[in-house]
Amino acid sequence: MQDLLYLVHRIPYPPDKGDKIRSYHLLKHLSRRYRVHLGTFIDDPRDRAHIETVKGLCGETCFIDLSPRIARLRSLGGMLLRQPLTLPYYRSGRLQAWVNGMLETRSIPGILVFSSGMAQYVRHAAPARRIIDFVDIDSDKWMQYAATRGWPMNWIYRRESRLLLEYERRVAAEFDGAAFVSAAEADLFRRLAPEAATKVTHFNNGVDTDYFSPGREYPNPYAASGRILVFTGAMDYWANVDAVEWFVRDIFPALRRRLPDIEFHIVGARPTARVMTLSAVAGVRVAGSVPDIRPYLAHASLAVAPLRIARGIQNKVLEAMAMEKTVIASPQAMEGICALPGKELLVAANEREFVQQIIALLQHPAHQARGQLARARILKDYTWESGLARVDALLSQSVAMPPDIPYTYSVEGYLESAEDPA
Image 1 (cartoon, rainbow, N blue to C red):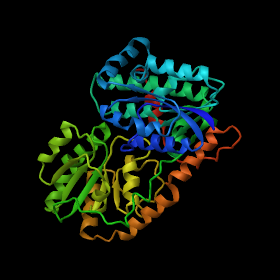
Image 2 (cartoon, rainbow, N blue to C red):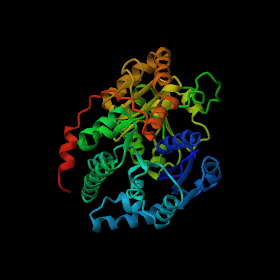
Image 3 (cartoon, helix red, strand yellow):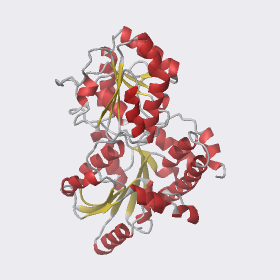
Image 4 (spheres, rainbow, N blue to C red):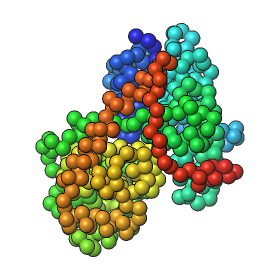
């Protein structure tokens, strides 16, 4: 087996949130073909319980504890050095020493970096074949955050977006290949970084369709027997918090007036204090962390994904589709998902459209056919086997990458804003 160095910004287990789902399936796939040496951070002390599970998939490993509070303070050093704050946030002398030692003592022909913050450890590592999985365009996410905040945070976020894009472009130019989570994301980055366009590709996130199967019996977790809307996701993630707050504040009251028995359930780990306060609203329930989200999807009337800030592919949408649920998503939440609006899922661009479509579906609940079409789409385009075959090609110099499917995406607005001085 060849050696492969794999650097990830967060321990790739358990696969219970977006980035960890992708990084875990990558690790599991790579471990069948390579002796994978893993360097990663642990930013949640509870994840230390999973170290032995991860070690079982690896050769040598390096786990570094990362305190988010201390890392945020450390990242302020980037303000003085004209660096994106992301770099000092994930900077560790111990991890750099471990990486240097691995490169000096082992013959490592391939390196896979997961997320832009980890590229700093191997920018000196040529001639090893270096591939980066950016996953999302993080610089664009910071630009979206800037649009939601007032001064001075909008200035800081705009600065981070501009400097991080410069860094992403340099890394993509230096490395041998760059991957993103969708064709849409890859296409946008080619336009933002035309000098690296020929190196950019994507591989889709997948869904474990045996696990997320509508064909099993699941216990009903809902006390009520009425109409149930469900939102799933990590509830300490800013975009998810914004989504449920918007839904409860601006959409749910109109639904409740028309359908008094309707309930909105928020299911996901680590709900913030702001999320917990939503349970004071009549009909809103915050489940928090649950051992299994499948019963919540299986017994819900509809799944909603009202995200206003999003990049990449939303696993919550894919998982609900795999469970044959009708999903009503914002345009941002379905960005990058290859599915037919109106047939395989529904799109609502504003409060009025969410209300109209939810009421129409709940009053005329004939969505079994749509759910079946949604699952068929997942089986066709969103299995891990098909997506990860592209990673094998990326890591092999002798295998040609399959071409990306052309994707129409307007980036003019972001290009203009990215060029503005902070």
